[in-house]
Image (cartoon, rainbow, N blue to C red; front, side):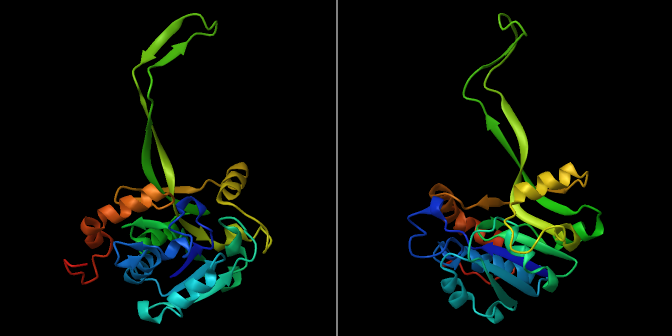
Length: 245
């Protein structure tokens, strides 16, 4: 199984932590970087090959990860000279990828079984399967439903919550889905989703109920470090982590 990790962003929302290091290399709990956790997980879930799409401070990622042998993986790289969007860097790799493969952001902490997720996608018919997570927005105010005249209230809800599903930044992809696009073009996840929906090719949703944290902001990074002592054995159950870690 082959995974493509998107690790080329500048991490501007995570500053000042990303001033001197790329976001995938920021440490969690003074033990592992985000990227190391992901690489260990991928190996444990049956992956053998990983391609790192690097850009900003990519030389540091190359120096840190190397050929991936210390993680039990075969790691290679693709350089993003100019920003190509979420999916754009993958278009240059299609010739070297298997028919189904994993794409994921390099700033995700989750105990999702990446191998089982990819296999579920391969067994289905969706052009792409998105790992999704339940979230909800709670209103700070009482919400009024008003009739068409705008003069009469017909319903009232006190600080309601609206449930929805969000993308976890982890995607199982079928290679044929991307052949319609030209290598080198800018292609965001949003554009891909809208194109598929417009053509009637419905993407799949794989709802996950475990642990997931997208480390995009300083407060998310602080949360990850605060939770590390209790979550390290959940994220890396196959590792021999001591209490001192």
